[in-house]
Length: 287
Image (cartoon, rainbow, N blue to C red; front, side, top):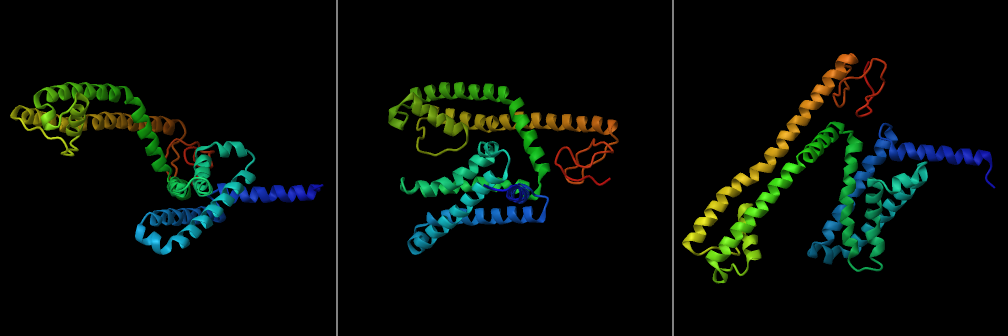
C-alpha cells in the first residue's frame, strides 16, 4: 500500500510534469515545446523522404528505424500528457489530444495495414503548437476575426455559389447543344465540367470548343470568370473590415471604463488597474 508520503511525491511529480508539458512560461516548459517541435519536423521529414524512391531504396531501413524512434517518443509524450493532467478525458477528446493520437497510430497500424505508416505525415498538424510556444496570440486574434467574417458572410457566399452553379448548368447545356459529342462535349455533365473549369480560369484544355459560336461563348465565360473570382473575396473582406471596426470600438469603450492599460504582447486595451495579467492572451501586464 502506498503511504501518504509516496502519494505526495507522486502528486508533486505530476504537478512538475504538468508545468513542463502544458506550460510555456517556464524555461523547462519552453525547452520541452521547442524540442517537441524539432522532433515533429524531423519525423515529417523522415516520412517525406520515404516517398522519394531513390532515397527510400538506399536508406529504407534507417528511415523506418527513425520513424519508430519518433513514434515511441510521441507515444511516451502522449502517455505523460494523460498522466500529468487532472482531467485526462478532456485532453484525450480535445483537438490537440486527437491530433496527438492520430500522429502515433499509423506506425502501429502498419503491422496490420501495409503502407499505413505514410499517414504519419498527419504529424504536420502538430506544428500548430508553434502558436503556444511563440505565444503568437495576435495571430490567433486575427484568425478569430477571419473565422467570424466567414461565418457572417456564409449566407451571401451560399447565394453566390448557387448562382454560379445555375450559370454553369445553363452555359453547359448551351455548349452541349452548340458543340456536341464531336468536339468532346459528350454529355451535359461534361459540358458543365468544362464551364466550371473555364469560369474558374483553370483551363485544363482537355475539352476545347471548335465552332465559332462556341468559341465566342467561351470568351464570354472567361471574362465572367474574372469577375466571379473577385466576388467572394470582396464579401469576406467587407465582413473582415467590419469585424475589425467592431473590435476597435469595443476596445475603445473598455479603455475608457478601465483606464486603458495595454498588454505589451497583444496590444489589447481595456484592463483594470488591479489586473496583473492580460485577459486576452495571459501575458503579465507592466504596471
